Amino acid sequence: MDKPKLLIVEDDEDVRRQMRWALADEYEVVLAGDRVAALEAVRAHQPPVVTLDLGLPPEAQGAAEGFATLDEIRQVDQAPKVVVITGREEREYALRAVDRGAYDYFCKPIQVEELKAVLRRALYLYRLEQENRELQRHDHAGFEDVLGTSPQMEAVLGAVRKVAATDAPVLIIGESGTGKELMAQAVHRLSSRHKGPFVPINCGAIPENLLESELFGHEKGAFTGAHMQRKGRIEMAHGGTLFLDEIGDLPVSLQVKLLRFLQEKRLERVGGRQEISVDARVVAATNADLRQAMREGRFRDDLYYRIGVVVISVPPLRERGDDITLLATVFLQRCAAGSRRRLSGFTRDALTAIQAHAWPGNVRELENRVKRAVVMTEGARISAADLELESVIAVDGRALRDVRADLERETIQRALAKNRGNVSRTAAELGVSRPTLYGLMEKLGITRS
Image (cartoon, one colour):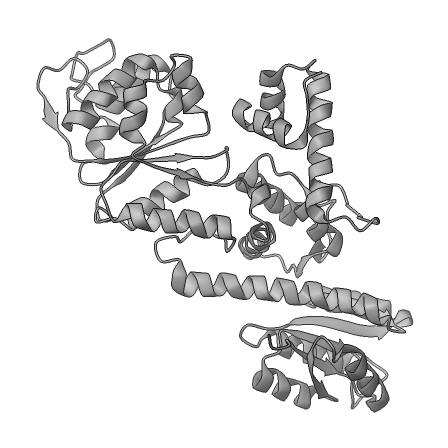
């Protein structure tokens, strides 16, 4: 595999030579001694990472030329990550450079191994952002709001593409906040029904006495307050897709009526006698364990097999690897642009904390934390404290997944102890479903005692 390119912008020839020698084992090094040469090298070689000494000619004792170089590099399409190199006595210049878009700074004298670690992280983020741009440009047609390059998500997107080409009912399962509705929208957009309506309804958010009318509609005078005829969500989805979110919360009495519609493609409004034909594809979603609900008599077997012709499982965020950092970066860029904030990214401790956190609220929790951090931060970059995450320093060399597992175990054990082993109350406190909590407890070797 070819080495990534690294541009070193430094006016001192001896320092340039030393840095080239120190970094040549990991990078194809390109050198420049002033602003003009640096910009030419950026355009010609398109390096993902640049080290920039702020003291450049014609005023090597100041920082004006270095700042000008930084500003012009940042304006280049797919701009590289810039790590500023400066003296310890000029640290305020480095902080100003970060505020103007530099990825990070490093003070002289240079510690090579520390600099390598900073450069690796900068390269990692550049590649993530590049992958996201490529996905948006090519592979994600129909998946406009879906982000991810992990093998787990690629498998999900492949399944969505396949099922979208058919008219089969789809059941999407996954924890709360994983993006099940986004997947349902993708099924609709990629299907032959994409010009028809996409009609969502949350079966758990509407009181049982109103849900039947909401789904099937009603005739005038069908009940007190029914002053006019009204179409239900199923009728509204004619020619398109009906999305039944949290279908596990659908009352058993309505499960019978929904099953009849799925079998016959016909329905009767509440208070009506006329059968109405409706051509709507049904996509359902749930974060509940429907098989357990069937065993307990809370969900009909025949309805399950009718809606679950194809079952797509959306993985939780903690199982999506580098997608976590990619999503955090995209959310930061979107929120910063919407808030008109000039933020240059995450601090190193923030990135480590993001990877280590268990994310019980999944993508929704990540997006909300980033939004809040963008509003509340007073710095140029988002820190772990801005995200309300604990800083994680793995001094014993453990992998991040091990750190995250320890944090998950400690959090769950503390919550179980607080709730005296009651799984239902613990799951509610942690914001996950009971089946999800049971799965985590089994994986982490946790008992209720």
